[in-house]
Structures are given as C-alpha cells and as structure tokens.
Length: 197
Image 1 (cartoon, rainbow, N blue to C red):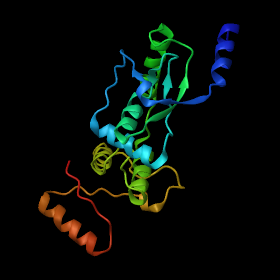
Image 2: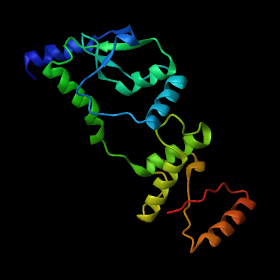
Image 3: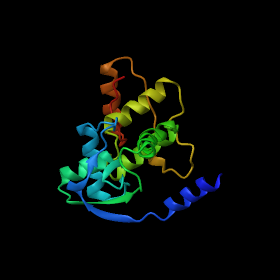
Image 4: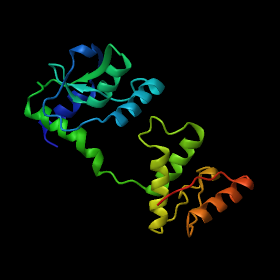
C-alpha cells in the first residue's frame, strides 16, 4: 500500500456521524439503483424496529452517495433528520461517483448459501415474521421448492440451528393428493405449508 493510500485509509477511519436535516439531502443524479415500494416497505419496517442501523454516506455538499433507499424510507416515515457519514468530496467528484458504484454493486459479488439462508429465514419467520427482512413467506416457499427441485439438501449445515428449521418437501402427484397430505399432516400436529411449483 502506498503512503498516499495509507493516509487516505486512516483519514476515513475516524469519520464521525452527524445529524443533518433530511430536507438538506439530495439524491445523487447518477444513482442507478431504484427502490420499488416493496423494498421501501421493508426498509420502513427496519427503521421502525431497529432505528438507524444502516449507513448513509453523503458528500460535503449533502449529495447522497450511499443510503438512497433508507433516506427515502425515512421520508415516508416522517423523519426530519438523518445520521450521516460525510466524505470530504463533492458529489460530482469522480471519487464520489466511484464510491456510489462501489456501494451499490460490491454486495452483489457475495454468494449465498441457500441452505443456511432457508434455515435462517424459517427461524425468523417462526419467531419474528419476515416483514422487514426483504423476504416474504412466498419467497421462502419458492426458495425451498427451488432447492428441492434441484435435489439440494434443505437441511441446515449448522448443527446449532434449531430443529424447527428442518424441513421436508414432498412431491405430490396432483392438487388432490396435496390437500389430502396437508390435512393428514396437520391432523398429526405438524406445521405445513402448501407449495405450488
């Protein structure tokens, strides 16, 4: 790492959070991520449950570089101030634009472990509900069905995951058989959901 890069890394390490009026923030003109209402609803739920647990990063001229969605959700929730980290760059600075791209794309390079995700979502669904996670009950059902169709093991790898997250998927010949099995399993005290694949 060059001396200049070390100095820049150290500079950012001491960034302070400051409260700014939400009305003073401007979305970046080149922001390429759009936030549909379904996502905003999850972000609003996250704000209600956890408060400001997500970062908002702005330029020195109050242009949003990271956190467009959470700021939009906060506006919908009636927030008047936002905690932000401020970079000492103007919003149209090429380094600010590079940061905008980085913040919106690097997370897509991660790979999900669908088995762990399904087990975690099942636990969250059972204890807290999925609202505010970015997933719906239908998303979880579709994930489990997709994994089963691919022949994937839908049991968690982590032995510490509660047994209530263990799942069995049964392929039925038709809707009538599905209804019969659901009724039978529910009469035996099992929690069941119908999946249509």
